[in-house]
Image (cartoon, rainbow, N blue to C red; front, top):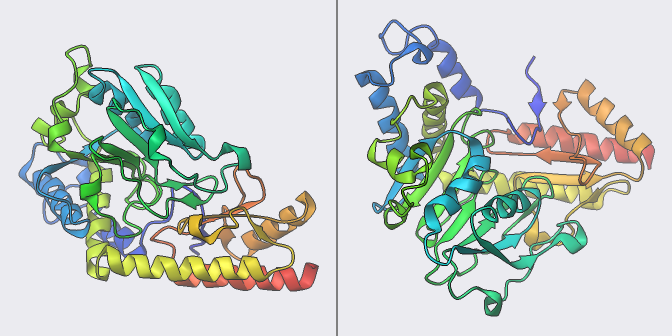
Amino acid sequence: MRVYNFSAGPAMLPEDVLKIARDEMLDYKGTGMSVMEMSHRSPAYQDIIDRADATLREIMNIPANYKILFLQGGASLQFAMVPMNLFRGPKKADFVNTGVWSKKAIAEAKKFGTVNVVADSSDKTFNYIPEIDPAKFSKDAEYFHITTNNTIYGTKFDRIPDSGNVPLVADMSSNILSEVIDVSKFGIIYAGAQKNIGPAGVTVVIIREDLIGLAPDSVPTMLNYKTHAEEGSMFNTPPTYAIYIAGLVFDHIKNLGGVAAIEKINRDKAAMLYEAIDNAKLFKAHVSDPRYRSLMNVPFVLPDEELTKKFLDGAKKQGLVTLKGHRSVGGCRASIYNAMPVEGVKKLVDYIKRFDAENA
């Protein structure tokens, strides 16, 4: 029996995608082999990666002057690749600190240059998105970095900051493809796959072409965006199977009506869950201000550890799994990414209401 997996990542994949992968596991479209066994230099695989690129470009409405790169190393490697490629003059960047992952990106960027934190929400356990004052921006910054959705703390930017002529760089690992965004506002978007794109192992980087080729010669070949842009993400063997699954997920989103259709479903799912938590006596959302509430990650707490354990144990018996919260916040967390069906959220909502009635 399949469960409803509320993990922050790796996360659920659409069931129809898994069924296609199952049916093609031993023989991909008459090749007599699995995609996992296939040469990345073969025409069959070139078609897979080309279609993945084209479909992602279509569903995100990515302008022609952007390249899509399928890389490895997760968002964590991008924390270093971004400054290594964009720092060239003053070696300075502006950051907004909204949680664990932005802190990690800041720490990595400091190894290569100067970081100016223009806004910070650590004073309230990152339960809000701080106001951004343009007067605090560095006049000579080479990029401006944000984490658009904060997986651990359950916050997201309700509006994208205007960084002027400074390239805006965004870690979108946990909310890419969840809602419509204007890609042209960004210089670089990067995202680990394991939440809304596909299985762990591939990282998608969407980069404006004028930001490619800026890295100094001292940057290792594999960490230079130009290397991968010139070779169509196949300078070395890419994570072939992860890209194949990602392509199937992109097709799935397109067939559902695109990102706009997914966004409506996500807003309905999140509204249903937040309403249940807000109306309960025992449950409290970590993020109280609706403006900053994530559509993807919903942390919530109960009054004590005993009730939390009782809730989690009962949830597991009903096929509602991986609801334990991150240690930074405690309590519980429901990650309701694109592939989480409405039925899964409804079942969780019903359980929250029942548990609250029986234990309050």
